[in-house]
Image (cartoon, rainbow, N blue to C red):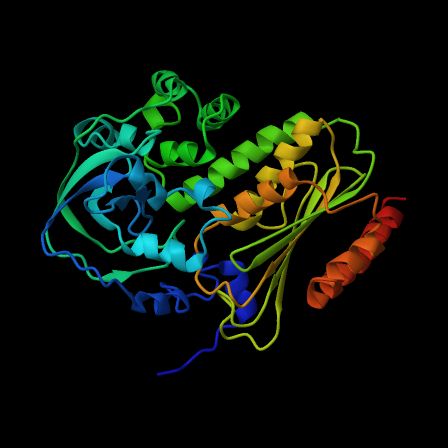
Length: 411
């Protein structure tokens, strides 16, 4: 047997799902299979309200697993807290989120991605997925769930699960009228996503709608693995918002924003200039995905005014939504730098939702400094983190060199 040490730089970019190391299963995330659940079921019948929590897997595509999770014996609005990213932010820590996920049970069935009618009408799960309130659900399992919670490369840690004989909603879901209209119209997925977003439908609901096959041209609708759906919706909404700031005047002054949550620090620096978003991630050793690192791992990405990015990354796509919502509200474009510092305390990956909500929260709370130059921003960051300050300073220096070279090459 040959042991191969995978560089932490690969793990930080891969985040367990791009398979950049060539392994079929992420060797790093496999260690989270040791997160055992204490409260094991004594019966194969599970009754509770799904928040809703419905996930479409990607393994075996086009035949995939459709998971429906419920907290046993928890009904009504009390069940909402088991999957409520916007409600969690700032209130729950990593251990709290893991505890909630541990106390849910998932039943899953295997379905073909083209069998949307089965999911929507025969299983009646399509409308459950997009319900604005928890839906009472009865799950009959074929065997006891293995008492282990898996992190894997999922939007949230996957709850203990087992194959299901049946999954039956026992109360009526409440569906936003806008989703009913989209379901009955023959719209492409991008148009449907932006239509729902403009009418105030929550982005998490839109993600589930795309995942269970409610969006797209009528004769081409398919189930979409949840992880793919999340990034697709984030990207569609970002492109939609970007179209609103194209050609707008630039912001008049610079501003620096900051927030910290779940062992993640975010600095967002907005300054006058042609639209671009610079993404800088700093992963400390011993954080999620960098357990084998002996020194910090730095990851860079950038989106230009054309909408093109250096490489597709779910975390970056999630962060862009908050920035573009902010710029769209101002009807201004700007040069934006997002600096994310991942501390060793972020030991369990819980999905990109916290990135999306943290950036939103930082911008909603207001700037911690205004009319600041880049050198002043470097010093402000240094008050919290010398490492983050040095990385940002080096990035600014290297980016200025590249921009200057491009200028002369165009001459």
